[in-house]
Length: 275
Image (cartoon, rainbow, N blue to C red; front, side, top):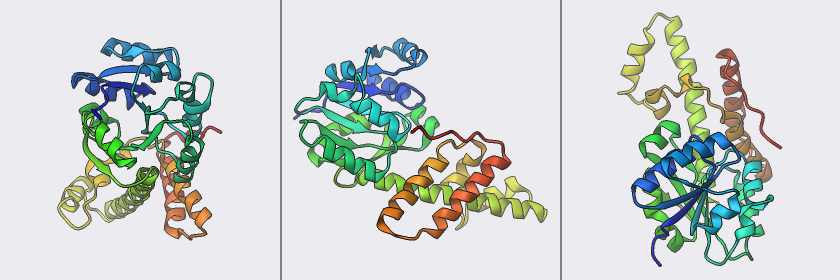
């Protein structure tokens, strides 16, 4: 089968809106929905066909991408009033771009197994600047032939797209990515503060470390200067999965507390995870 040309995006915020822009620039038709009127108005100015519900966006699409924040948001998008399941039909492809727990991904697969839809993993990495530039990274999972059919759409806003296995594999990969990311941020913060206390210029040191064995993405982009709203959520996903497996993750526990302390020290807001 051919690449789907009619794309739906649920969530037209910092990630979904630039995704829509890149898709339309590549010749895809985009229908979108967001509960926030401002987000819809901004997307409409780009040419997105705004629909009154997620279900209506799905009815106008062959491939629907979910780009919302939390598991609870994904739940409402799929199963709430006006949700995607109201438009479920054989062959409809739904890509979960949100970062959700692997256990919730497994639950979604069970709950949608008899609906005819095809679920894909497509959690997004690299953040808002990469979304604007069309240089995100997609960690994919699900039915491989379907994923490959959808790859050209994903490549409009992602410079790297990886297929990793069955549905849920992408969420496992995103969890692992985030565990390492937050560990790097915590290590960078401690090392640079210690060096500064010993009289070494931080900027010069960062430039030197960028060419050494200590080089890492978080240090290169100085991501610690951004509010990092998802840190606690990301670490709780990892720790929750480990609890189910009865697997100790002492570093992950410590990193969670270090990141919490870092955000308090810098007066970064800590969002409350929706129920």
